[in-house]
Length: 300
Image (tube, rainbow, N blue to C red; front, side, top):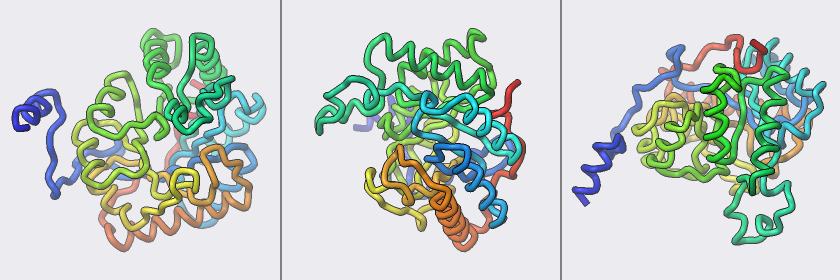
């Protein structure tokens, strides 16, 4: 095994010990930011951000998960405006995916391993068109589920077919769970990665040691992905994996595509407040990124 470990070290994948602490930070010096996923509509986003301001909490990123193609132009315009006014990032997810097309396989127990990836040439084209539409309306953050789509979109960004300011985030549904997979995605132009939800602390440390981009970690989960809540682990998330986006409020939803109501948006903010309390009690020296106007949701 030592020879294997030595080779992995040579390619930037090193073993970490139990005392590993990340010295990596966001560009503003912060170790962590708050993200609320599953916000599917302008009215829900507005309720979420209003409650955050009422509770004096900072939300750094809002993520929509149902798909760009399920939003009207007017809804996207409104969400971009809300993000700009509040000062947070807005990420919209790619609509075309195996679960939405004609695939019967993806709905079987074994076929579910396809996840939300794209099937065939036409669906790849549709997904690119979905992204181009969002970008034309001012969105600068895209949630992806497919490695091949990331490859193409990054090529387009490098060749000025898409804005250089466009950021790509990979979903936990893509199944990344080890440092080699994370390193591959980073090398393909990924800006932020969400590994699978149930990784243990040493596993997260090994991924952080191998990559520099932010890691998006679920502090809690919908029932459909296990329903487990990891609030007490959040201080360790920050220590070993910074810079991190703390994805909070998922336990309010039943599944990834859950249509969060305005009432549930307020409940998600309560979950953020509970996580914030954990940080203040158990890692008070942790540095949160300040709230600021985002360039990820604003037209250039």
